[in-house]
Image (cartoon, rainbow, N blue to C red; front, side, top):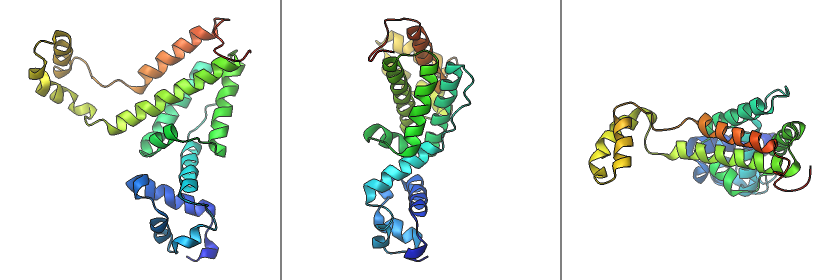
Length: 219
């Protein structure tokens, strides 16, 4: 491949592949150039720097999130949106941390937020409540996904690990009882993403019915 055949799209797709394989720590302009068969300097004709690459691949991830059809059922739409985001972020383990630590303003992110605001506004949310709503939902999805990706215990191992830690809980009766329940298989331990997402949506539904719960600018 020569520099003339490069494009921003090809550079970012190659960078996405590298990040998925080894995280953003493994992504450098030199390694990116090697993966494309060119010198690193050739990349700067298409992307300004590594920061621009990170912004670009983050937006590529957001573009993979399937936005639900607008049917008038805002809770269903926001639930589908949240689950779709979680599924996509699980495929790109490096992405949640970047989404929580950067100002992301690529076209896919703008479309994603604009769609969300439109659904909430059509449902009667004030501007302030709609703003709080999408930020709260996304904060939960990003954080839950990051925890799931980094937590050292897999769901299938919860009971075994709980049983191995019971001896540490003498004098802590509530922790000990819950741990015994998990160890016996009576409780899964790790919640599903739907548990927290539905709690948020139910709370937002209650707030949306309260005229005083604008949380910011007027309707």
